[in-house]
Image 1 (tube, helix red, strand yellow):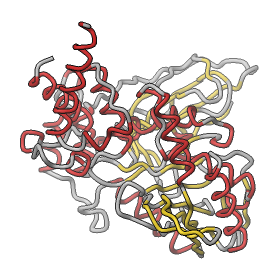
Image 2 (tube, rainbow over the protein chains, first blue to last red):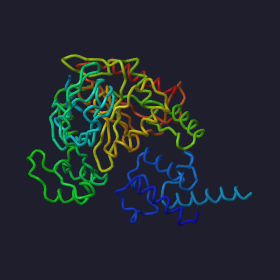
Image 3 (cartoon, rainbow over the protein chains, first blue to last red):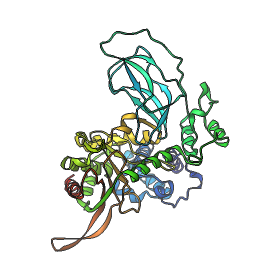
Image 4 (spheres, one colour):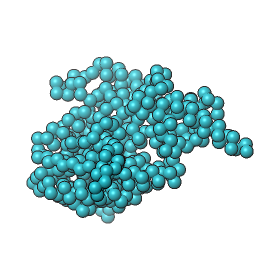
Length: 89
Length: 360
């Protein structure tokens, strides 16, 4: 997946969980859960869908690495590349 | 022959609007079957039937607003002879999910709207049109969304009638959360558990020890419930909350409770609940642990006799056996109905809750 495909997958997932949110104006550095009022149930459901779209499962221990749109994009991109790399080895 | 009537879906409900029949005359029904959908202040509710038999006649028409107790249908109990069926014209009223959401936000009654979508479906534009030309509301109702009015009615009744007592206890959650983290590490993401599951299961376990908090106050006395159905407060996006019941929590595993939440939360937010989920709760649990809230001073949902609240988990210094350490703790609160129980019962419940949470 390209960087922009990953970002789109994240935004699509967020749009499904928080359909009323104006994602175009979402600050990439804002805390996603606070900005979009996501509770732990919403967040888990979002990560499940994102995992299905990107093939990347975020362990609970890494939740601190995926708090903003920016850090989440970086994390998923890195993890997806790692998987691709391992697949070619 | 028996009458199937509009059930009371909570102490705060006076009437509901028939939206759709799921059965027709001649259909066989059994206890627990969903037979109709009604629109209430709490959204679209699926109504279940509580006897076995055959539908003889559908009395309530689509779009009719009917009070609690009004006859909706006539049911011939199993084993009695049939009468000639009368088939009323029944048509389904369709409402797009977005229209339903906007209607709830704007406080617009769907029953009064004419749909312009395919097959007469109510769409977003129809709701917005109705909202911009509102029918005359009473002064009392003006400007208040139906769900807010329902919550207001229940809370007014609670504060008027129930003498509350309040207790709180600080609970060390370190072991429980470590257990949860280990469990989730071993699971695929689809099977992960949330902390709320541990709290619900612990409340059910503690109620086995202190059953005087599980039931309703009716006819001037406490009516204990043998079964433990926990109303769990679920916040709606855009405001308000609904507290559907999770049935038989004490008999369920962590995975089964999580499966119930996975089923319930999306249905609550889409406004699709079943009548038994609104009527059969025996206690309420509210969890505000994802905010900065430390203690929840709950208001009991009548006719129940207790509500348990959980605040956030925070790291705190903790002294034990003469040693000082840092633990993850949360504050559990209990509001009890003083007509039904005393502080001593509440204290024993919180003690049992603490013990349950030390060994998840």
